[in-house]
Image 1 (tube, rainbow, N blue to C red):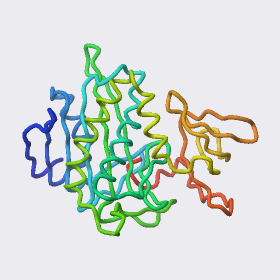
Image 2 (spheres, helix red, strand yellow):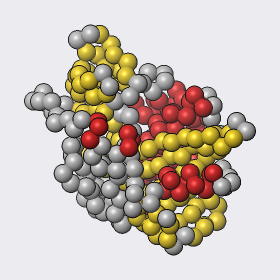
Image 3 (cartoon, rainbow, N blue to C red):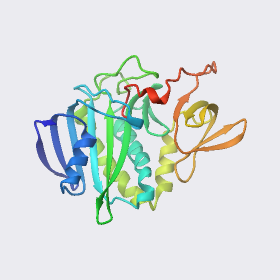
Length: 272
């Protein structure tokens, strides 16, 4: 399941396992947690052979892109674990901007956007370890060298403002620091208001028309932000909708709805 494993010394108290290839960095983190590995562990791989995203979708994971997952044990009360997606998003934007990728932002719930196209996704997974303990895995996949084609949305690679590529290694080194900073800022969920404010500063599509699709079907409205729990707020013809989970598209100014692939199809895409 893995090749070329190497354990680095701690960075800010985080251990780092570097792999050549793995089925999924999230799955590797899960295996290690279930066999007794401890808190604050990063898994980073050159390639994933079975990467996954939200709702069982595949994640295309070639060499040259960043594939990384952070394992934490009991990072917060279970009810607040979903907030880790916003923590990770804020950290990822800050890391990218540190390296000169100034035209990046966040699309709800967990996409990193560059020049209007998706260049990264985030996947949060949690599972019990017994004795009341919970493991949380925060997976991030970033298109650095290659972006998948033929998907239901535009994709891009993360680049600096001048068009130069961002190497996965240099991005990961910044991400370690920025993620640790954001976790400290979040204070295990006690200060989500700070993370929420930072996320909104980086949000794309605020005040614009969006289309969403979830189990209730497809509808559209104006993106008004996120509430204190991280739920999407959309003003539609029915009033203010509070959305727990959905796929989201920012509508072009023409107002033409995007082509939607039914959720059951589970097409390969990004990590989120």
